[in-house]
Amino acid sequence: METVLSYNNGNGTNGNGNTDYDIISWFEDVTQNAGSVQSQILSHILKQNYGVEYLKKWLGNYNIPEMEACALESLFTSVVPLASHADFEPFIQRIADGDTAPLLTQQPITTLSLSSGTTEGRQKFVPFTSHSAQTTLQIFTLSAAYRSRVYPIREGGKILEFIYSSNRFKTKGGLTVGTATTHCYASEEFKIKQHKAKTFSCSPEEVIFGGDYKQATYCHLLLGLFFSDQVEFITSAFVYSMVQAFSSFEELWREICSDIRDGTLSSRIKSPKMRGAVLDIIYPNPCLASKLEATCQELEGVDWFGLIPKVWPNAKYLYAIMTGSMQPYLKKIRHYANGLGLVSADYGSTESWIGVNVDPSFAPEKVTFAVVPTFSYFEFIPLHRHKQDSSSVADDFIEDKPIPLSQVEVGQQYEIVLTTFTGLYRCRLGDVVEVVSFHNGTPKLNFVCRRKLILTINIDKNTEKDLQLVVERGSQILNKAKAEVVDFTSYADHKNQPGHYVIYWEIKGEVEDKVLDACCTEMDMSFVDHGYVVSRKTNSIGPLELCIVERGTFKKILDNFIANGAALNQFKTPRCTNNHVLLKILDTCTVKRFHSTAYSST
Image (cartoon, rainbow, N blue to C red; front, side, top):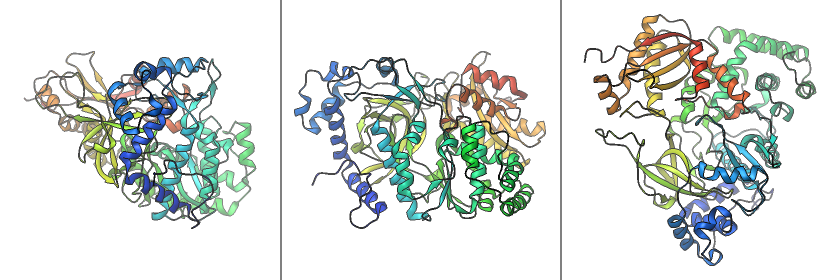
């Protein structure tokens, strides 16, 4: 019997009344023969779109509709070249400008998503179709089914969702543009998700679509507290947003409690729609306000340790993306959570969803994502580290030829390549993943880092992951002095000779300069890349520089990012940057500089 390639998101069940069982059963089916499913998915994509302008030059002379799936897969991967987003940009721009010819897909594209822009310093257009919304609903439903096995929740409960949409706008050609999450929140599929889950957000859509993240955060917190006994779990797109919200709560709790006591809304909320929607929900509740005030006064005395279970006693877990560049925020969220479960959200990009977390009980550091083989056609470029004596800086890895999903091996690192239903063909994603194990016939991936996001001066190569490990080593010294790193980024300074690494820290707590000197030297010594160590010993790379920035600096970076049209949902602090605007903010806000004394005697 042929595998069913798409899960029916309707309200029907298979007679057992259990939709959780239904979607997990479907996923078990499609992952049993993931390689065959992938061939069928590619065949569907190409038979829908083989006549589009982008593909014509390679596939125009072949009778695509008559080809078998396996033969088509072999042909496609041999004649269509690997591509980057830059190869699709001219076509996407023509679509944005109103060209209705079939450039990338046969079906008209009416909506474009904006990528976050935190990787390359600029946002990119990515096609968004009904398929994008449907796969979002599928992964939400599948992920919730696996979570409910570990953390059953009450029907009719509420979710405290720190979610934010950005403003949408029209292109010259009349296409709607916004972030992928904004499109999803506005879709019918999002409403279906809430209805099917029988749990609803504390916040109405007027708050989610309010457009001002500071006002929205206040309202999310206010409504989350108003319904504090009903909240089943707390979620955000990235754990960063959650940490930001609870950090704001430390400053806002008195004002929020006052609003709960009187049934009023702070004058800081300027949006008439937001004000009206929130005031329609809340009413005076002096008893709850007094209880929350007593709890918050107690929490202030312990630096807000255990904030979440104290304020939301029925919350089962926290759910957000917690991998990659989000890992540095885990220590802070654990401080607030005091043992509450942390569930890492699923793996995807603006271009496509990729994998689902089928092991929600695993700590974020151990989480893997089982590739959903029906979402896109996936290829994997094997990556190998340069040998220690390599002097090449042309690339961060040595590459082999791409292989299909069915040929990946445990322990090997790969870059993901996508062919999507939305008009991207063999597009390199730039994500480095490692295959950890398999779920039936589909690989379970661990996200390693982004490609190209590296610190390098000459023969040295340090990835985002390397930098995170180094900062962890330095921050251990800081923690002993009762201080902590709030956020960080870095920069490879080539202007001064010899070039050197600069790491920017925003810290909380008072600490002596000698401690920060020690942190700086410890980080310099903690880079283990052979090229870096050799270069430091020969002084072809200068001493590491640690810059301490004033409190609130990284919020200024966030505000700059949002001022340029992005949403808080998308924000990821860039761990390595050469963006001149960000560097100007960082340098203007630097209050102290320290230089490593490592290698000074060699």
